[in-house]
Image (cartoon, rainbow, N blue to C red; front, side, top):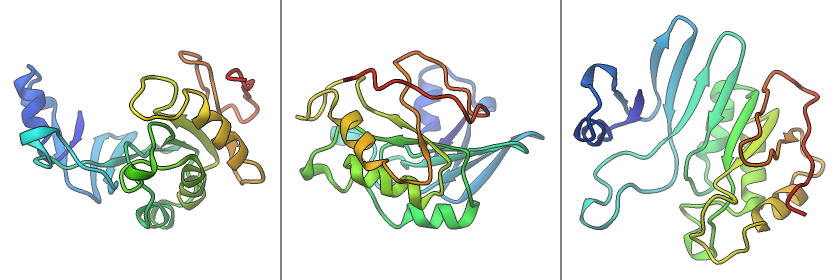
Amino acid sequence: MVTPLGVGSHLRYWGMESAIISEADWNQAVPVSDELTVHVLPARHFSGRGLKRNQTLWASFMFVTPQQKIYYSGDSGYGPHFKAIGEQFGAVDLAIMENGQYDQDWKYIHMMPEETAQAADDVRARAVLPGHAGRFVLAKHTWDDPYIRLAEASTGRPWRLLTPMLGEPVWVADKTQSFNAWWR
């Protein structure tokens, strides 16, 4: 298991064996096998709550195999790190991007859907799977607002927007797979 710095202590506390935990700093690569390298990358957020705030690192991840690159933004506000990631890794087959639980007061830690679209451009995504939307309520927006706004913001972009129903599989290699706007 690859985690940002400091998260390993929580995992060990919960019973995970140290031998399977690899902690890494931003811009470090962790070879998991001959076929998979996980890159721990910057994000704009914070970690923990209450008295345990900011004692561990927060991160995004790039999963690289000989066939594909998959980027996971994690929780992150919009920033120049997305463009830097795109420049470092080139085109990304799938970007799983934060899109939900946003508020103008949280703009430095959670992206608005229009920023999610720009971040997907920045990381050079070929396909985008929105995350963080329709799963739980933290913000004041309606449950479907992230889908509506990202669908509008994705028009004319160089990537495909993938919006499966919760639990529906996504086949990254299938360039023809499409999904209905089920939230409408």
